Length: 367
Image (cartoon, rainbow, N blue to C red; front, side, top):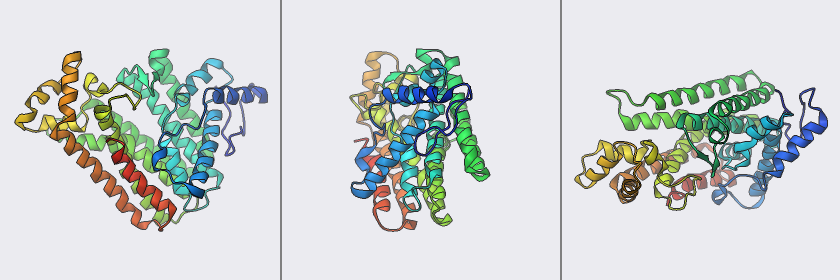
């Protein structure tokens, strides 16, 4: 059940003995046939000029390496493993790794390998998340669990974790340790989200802790890998790691807000999906924790999953005009500002400007 290892130029470095060069080539060609362009959809904040071209080239290399990493000599395994990758995505984590690497030797092959490891890890968690959430759609396409089965989705996620580990092994024991601790935080965050806030816990603090573990930790590792493998000074690596955690939480908060404010399903799912599923994101938590008489009806509606169409539309309209949404947007800005403050350690120039623009983007994308 092994596939091709991803090389920095997107070509295989090794393949399963039984696969052969022809099978590997077919794997890459099949995957790329289903991907028309590099999948990043976070372009509005990206720089122009030489830095923008370098990032675009780097992302294309990462995309090619990802295509190899999800390959297999078995057609069904290849299809399942490439399913979410082919559906697109923001490629936020590898893009951040590539940007951080611009502060050092961005051409170091380990930079691409680290970026691929982080994206494979992220993709693997999505397969598992969709099973736990019983999600039917991911990135505007049928989720793997709804298309095939929960068992296939779980096993495919495991396969991608294995592929990430295989690449990681070439990056040294410290990288393995960092990834292991990141993965521990990912799982811990999922456990905390699953069991929910316990009696005596602050639900809002619990929510933010979950985001830091489930999202912030891997974004932080992406920035850390990109900078460290490019040979950036350790003090600057630490600052970029902290930046990654803060901006990662901000990005997830903005995703949660987009589920409310979007009217056209730009997130790849129908607006208000979290409400239907009873997932209490930050605006809902503020509403439930408050006693504003103007939000009494809203609290009544969101106290449980809102499955009735009329009540769902009412709840969504109330949320969009609520003070709770304003408060949640304020928290989003706080995290973006905290991320920006980490950039004081970054030398002035195009890279710092791009990272600062990212802080703006995570806020403005919700408006």
